[in-house]
Length: 299
Image 1 (cartoon, rainbow, N blue to C red):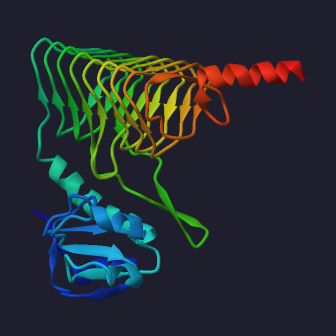
Image 2: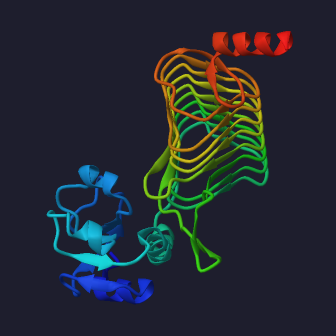
């Protein structure tokens, strides 16, 4: 296992060590699940209530550090998000070296088309059909009875960058992709890996062609998504939802079970109850959209 001291990490982020500089860190984790040998980051006070009970160390500001009682070890920085981005590269290199030693396991009755690339540290279930020119990155788990059409990319890095001094610092992604049983993924779709956790397509999810699923998205059981729909990062979608073509879903929102989003709709807020929704700005229940359209016609 690879370890790095808090002091060595501090050299990368140019901050200040508070606590034990010799503390050995083995992984970078989400703040909600950070263990005693791991490090996480906090950039806003609102995340304090979700911080795990025994994080090894936290990357944060001096103001937030004063409010944390569950650890005495910190990397104090001006911008925790930028520092986090810089640290991801270290653990990405550790993970890449580890993946080289972990073989992929493929189940029974798996059909592979031409030019299919499956990287190390993947798990492919039984009765899976992977068509031509599919790329599957490390840390991907695929269940049974899954069909993946041509040109699909699973597990590539999400669109994660932190702005620092007029430049972009890449956030290396350390999570994976988890695909349940009986899933079908249409041609040329892309499912990004999670930043730290997994991007998830639950059992029975079906995606049309050209669907984009960004990092950390979780799509619930038996949800269907039509072509050219895009889910921004960290969206949580419930069970049995329907998304019409060319829908757009902004990041960090939650969508309830049994929601239907009609074609060309932009979802800009969480939807807490089932129903049919449409519209561009703002999204609202479809019946309200129809009333709004009727008023426009009268004008």
